[in-house]
Image (cartoon, rainbow, N blue to C red; front, side, top):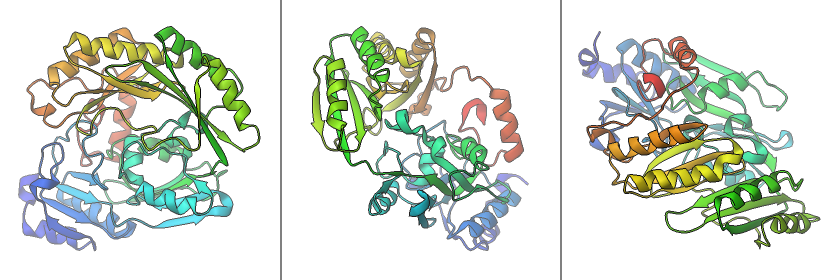
Length: 419
């Protein structure tokens, strides 16, 4: 059966039989410039499973969506027939005594953090994208500054419930940290952009909210100084929660070190860090509202750069230079402590410019460079950039896709290698 043959009212009836609310799609529901035929909102995991099973029988290509804040990450899908909204999947089961929470995929991260804060706990995940949901965070795999101390998002996941393309539900892990059975499933889905299955709920390990926080910041006079400061802080024994780098298009590179913990001793730790950074300024209290935010505007192209830790400052310089050679600019920020940066190119930069900057970075850096989010219309520019570059293990990734979604019905083409 071809997709065209399925675009009939019986298809909508079959989808609706799952218990999901189904409606005709509108231009505002477009994904990567492609308008789907239907939008469905299942109320729970069982309905989501029945919905995907129906879509599988009908041969409908399906893309998941929470609050829509990550719909422009990855490549445009090859085709979209159905958008599955997760916004009704918002249950929260908080086991405060175990420092664990299970949250529905559609739960806004801000709401989850507010609920956890009332119990003096937190999911140690910085909100890089405002308005994002649990499912969106897993799909993009975005991990913020505090990944340095607590690990990236995938390391905070101890269990997950997901639904395969054919409607089969799978669960892994549990509600206690020592249960490791779910780690593989969580790692597979984290950053897969919804190409392996629908995540309906995630169980996270939590941390107590720290009593005190200090942010130590200084502008580095040059790249070598920033590199030296980063190394000195990481080797100092002050146990920073984050070492962040910010390099705007015009202005110096700033290094900000976040120190968290008990009130007793935190000032000594912060003073030690400040001394290592040439007498940097120390701010008391939590970081400001822009802490960890992605650089640039919401429609700018974002290039993700992963390099060895000691190369982060040089990578920021390389991004600036690569952009300058293409007669544009780059705003760079990210974790110098983890070696993960984002470079924002203006939304007006065309596909040829983006491609040239990405190629230059791949040639000049020892690491991975991907076009994580493209500006609107970039794919229509007539010169689609190479978003992924060389990807080690691509054959294995394709084998996993074949196992989970052999008919390529989940966000086909959105991930690397056409996955």
